[in-house]
Image (cartoon, rainbow, N blue to C red; front, side, top):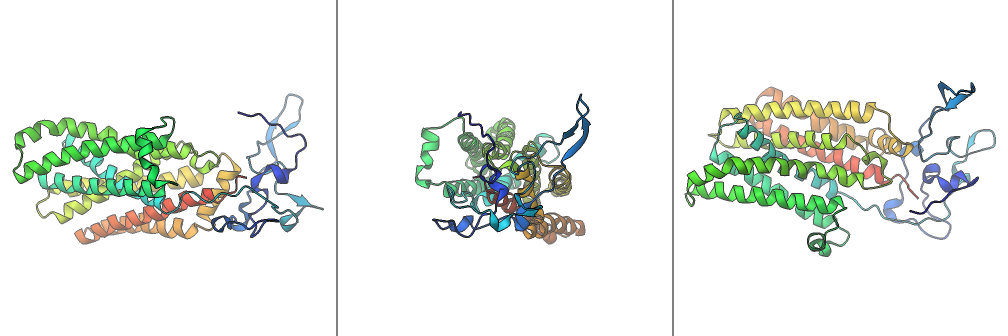
Length: 381
């Protein structure tokens, strides 16, 4: 890696977030999806001095988050913020690479892997009795949303026609490649298991044989589902410069989200099948409510309540909670995705329970849309 040191470099040139993205540069136009600037400038007030003292008795200054110079925003005169006095004359422009397919893929992947993974846990733990129509129904839903996930991943690639290169010429250091193989492994094992269950249900295969392979198949599905759920956190972690995604809590959050989506899917299947065992609906409802409550705590305490590691992450979080994506977050992610489902499930109506599962999925999309888009709008050059 090149090592470059600036001596008395201009803060305007060294900190991408010191200025807002203008409507036009000196010699070029700004590409369409970069004509955005954080609401209110996304400025974050930072403490200058801490309560700690050095050995010589001097007050130590608090560590300054990256992105802004130690004196805060660029100022002129007696503390007047520069604003239009400091403008971007030129820049290396890049379009925002990730759009709606990524948050949609996060939702469909959570449904596909979460539903079958949660069903496998319930069956192996003896909480849910074996009911072949339920296994077939949940397995079909899981495979359907896994296929949709794959389609969304291919659509989002810069060169979709080169998708097969990920398989035949893998770059194993990339979590995109690792995730692709985790999804392939999960869909292959679950597809073979579902085919056997369906064939036995239709009378095409010996049910005794299916009973013998059911436990090892479900035992293999659980770690593959877990891998398919959490690999996205490590993929986000490889996106250098998007500090809000560099979050060690993200794998846990993805598991909680997948549990909520999986429980919602089980809840829908339990109420659509007239002969579904009552234990399925009880297990699904309890898991659904518990995961939504935990998810609220993770968002409230882990992402809003804790200070961010850098000023860049703080700006992105501000965009989500108070800026351009506030409606997506509060009305979509929190209200529609959490409060409405909890209220609907509390009523106890089967129809409202199905509505709760749908509301949770739509709300998760709004939350993920804000989470994916906001960090990409913070300039990093």
